[in-house]
Image (cartoon, rainbow, N blue to C red):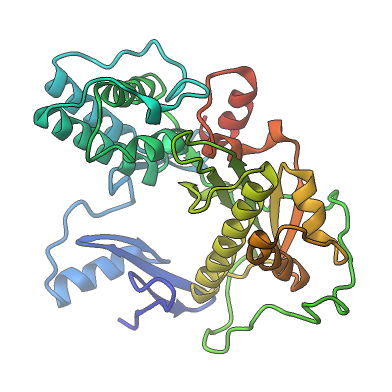
Length: 380
């Protein structure tokens, strides 16, 4: 059939067909085919190679996620059926429906790590682990809004307390109430022409005339160009027991959320500046990984990716060649971010904190007007 695995994603098989590339994405025994004539590929698999395929046809349900087009013809993905199954399992487990008198996954500023309630018995631990596992997959297939809550609660899977189970039940109640979140595949490129120019001369810096490494083993890309956008944020002292901060990152291809990240930082930072720089370094590393993945998938991407953060001091010290660092323990993060900017891989721009969607991925938020402004364009 002429398909070969991508060098960056071996589970995605691809081939050239005229002026486009065609793809088959494999997950265990599930296939998703993107091609000019997917029916012909299906027929070859069934007739020639004797694969027993079921549920074939235009994609409508895959790996727990529903796919459909809205009234404007825009492709949408939403884990509606999966969440219904989660709620059904919850009812069987506890004999009642989740309480929907909540408007956020957890309370703003909540700290489950300092919960002192009674430890759960073995049966309660199993219930808790089932709830967490289901929520983790819900995050993977599109529920960006519960990512931080699930990340936090996952840390107590081995020895959860009664209070942790109550928190997990609250997240289920939130999902039950806000179950119809949708990610729309918006293919138009964002317009960043109004952003300020960052035309600095890095030739006499320690980075010299650094440039992004070119791929020599990937054919020319085909199709329309895409612009990559990345939002990054950090929450200092998120965990009051360990002192760890949390990094939150949201990646978009054109105007479509493609990946999201919320995780405790490995080091303890004593100031917001430090935690924001660690987050920026993590974001840059993910940007470079995403750019490499897309290039090996033969997707044409714009020369520069756009990264937005809400700490102006971090942004300014990153984009100016003459900036100096006075905290040696942050040197690696400092230089990693600045080298990517000097190479023209990333442009780093300041965005007001109330307009930074990565804020949803770095802290527990209560429902208020500003959060809805960030959530609605992404999921509702």
